[in-house]
Amino acid sequence: MTDAKRALLVDLAPRWGLDPAGPWTAVELAAGFARSAPLHLDIGVGDGAATRAWAAEHPEASVLAVELHRPGVSTLFAELEADGPDNIRVAMADACEVLAGLDPGSVDHLRVLFPDPWPKRRHVDRRLIDRGFAAAAAAALAPGGTLHVATDWDDYADHMRTMVATEPRLRPQPQPGSDGEGWRSPRPPRPVTAYEQRGLDAGRSVTDLVWIRIEPVEPVEPNGPGPVA
Image 1: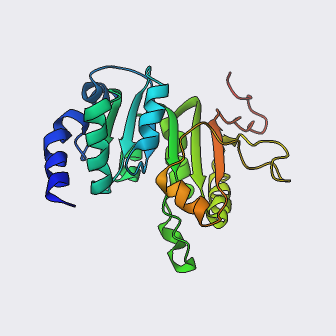
Image 2: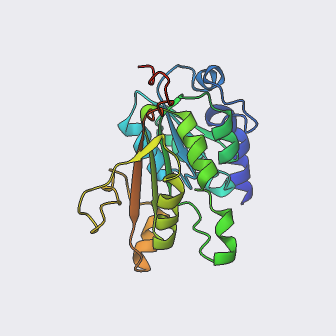
């Protein structure tokens, strides 16, 4: 962090940042964005290039960007101040705490692009996408909403698929026949981020995975009534 970047964080946080302590209720977020709108949640945004493109494509939505890396947030603040778009706010907060504090069903779309893969076996338990994350994401998403993750590590892609498969409220949206198994999803439109490009330059393949939030079918109780429509 240079002095200039530190100054940007201090000067621009009142305009583009939200209190990292929350709360993250719909009422508080509406106040932070100065409007009520569908909520898109972008976790781990780096310098925010892909987030800014996402927000520009969806001016009807409020895009909450979550990022702890201060140099990246400083760059994002500077870009937002220079050229917007206006429908982004940034939380320098723990992603799991943000998810836990959201109102149930308040998120239309949730995205995690290229989270830290923690490739060493002894570090696997540090990965963001696990069973707890899948449950929290399902709780935060509105029915019909989507969870989209991407990684350039094949092992992490398989890990993500396995973890999210434990959550019955999330149904995969694969591209049939795309990989012989059909569990990878088509690449949604987005710019190639700097992190993604490093993976491509290193010869790694990128996997996108998308799930849709559904209402699971309730089991019928023996000799009892069926689920209520």
